[in-house]
Length: 343
Image (cartoon, rainbow, N blue to C red; front, side):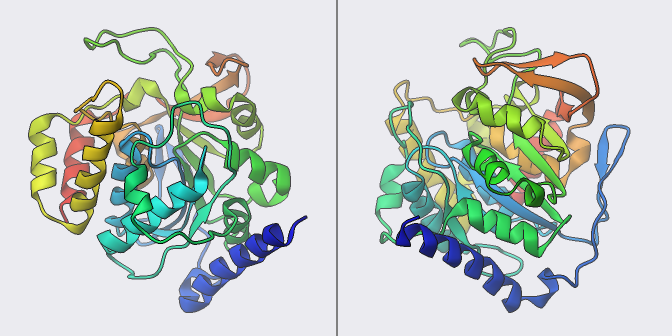
């Protein structure tokens, strides 16, 4: 093990532990919150802010920025840390650094949010569309995201919701490194998979199940997660292909809030640097965040899923290993997202 790796591991633990010491209510003294499912909806006592760790591949598509912004503007959660996933995770972490600094960070607690870099991997999608946003903030070494997330779980056993909205390399590394600690998560809320509906066609036509991007990039770790024994709440393509049309998008960007200003900057880089120059975002990832906060927007159905080598998530018979949202209250979701981001 190199000195750099040792430093990253120690720094990751110190970063999370230091945050707990700065706010003792986050460490140990908190009452464990039980997750209960009633009629497909997770019931969470509203007086208890959820402890959340976010794992994101921000910087490629634009939907991750909306997801981060939604977390920052939601008093129901306490964001304990962010780890970046897939490809150049250090550059992604720099992007998060700037987003947090320029958006004002957590609106409610004003506490610093640890930003960490996860497992660096090969990328097959041509690089970050929003790289320039990250380049404009000074480079720094980020702690090991895998170890930082595990350290947070050890500090808050049974209390943390891991929201995973990118390829699952960090999640698989967490399981490999310390499966027993990983099992102490309260739950995993994830965007990924495709059960009956694949990516919609160019004219909105419905298509059969596809290998969804997050799973296709890392089917091995997706299968590992489904077998990990942790409650999983999945938002697949079936419920997440929600388009942010021009009228609502323009209202958000015209709101002139610190968060919407940063999303607008990233949006224009995304439009400029995607091959097709799309202008209408598909809000896959914010659906997962919205579900963690407002579960009634997307009732769950228990399923048993298997992941094949091509990245297809196939429903099979047997004991359920995931709760899956097949249909979202689209109007309710968009109204919720717009109201929160304009705070």
